[in-house]
Picture 1: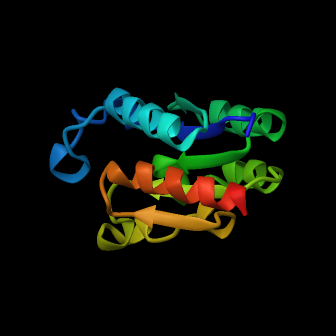
Picture 2: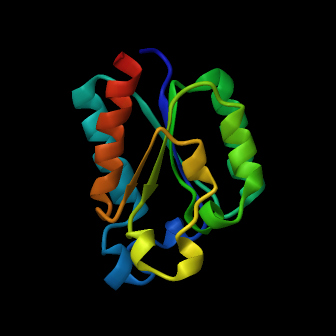
Length: 146
């Protein structure tokens, strides 16, 4: 596989390890990226990790992925529940999409129970902490191999 797998993170994930560690844990986004890079080496794939607090930047990266990525793993954060723009961009992407949430969004506030992104994703991983990213990467490699 020559194209990388994009791992995109939305708002406030830059504060991972600092913000509400009782919900999101103590690992930082840099820790997650390092773990994914090591796993990607084992799986003989490449990952490209990025984070933005800005919806338009995420849309730009998803659009870029149309030419540059084999698949997208996305944790849209709060944009999961609000962003039709991210959904529309993902709908224009032809490869597989997996959605990741560190917490179990279905055990949280009612407004978090719906995700626009889920209707486009081949799968959703929620509630496994940051380990969900590794699970998503393994699944993405399986989807791309099929």
